[in-house]
Length: 92
Image 1: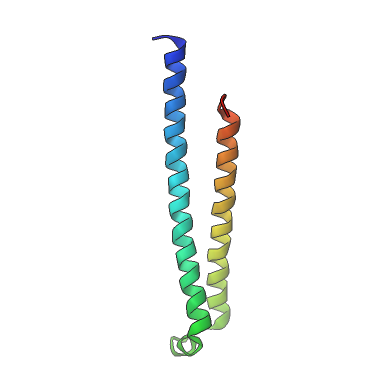
Image 2: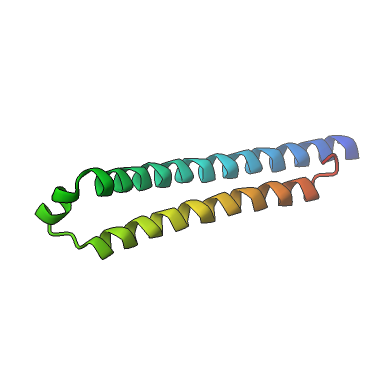
């Protein structure tokens, strides 16, 4: 096996791992966005529903803020993963 073949296989493994990581992060980000959207829609549309379910407004907003924080964190991680992969790859 030549060095070029070895490098190509190593590059292919790194690319496969990168694509898997990006797909996993995007999936979790979509789930968090959906949860945040459902909570926000429920909060704005069903003010009576909050009182009926005995959920305090502060708890509800706290849950929504935690989900928004998770989305922001996943978005930052996505950008950092892309930058790290571009810096490690010789072709950019």
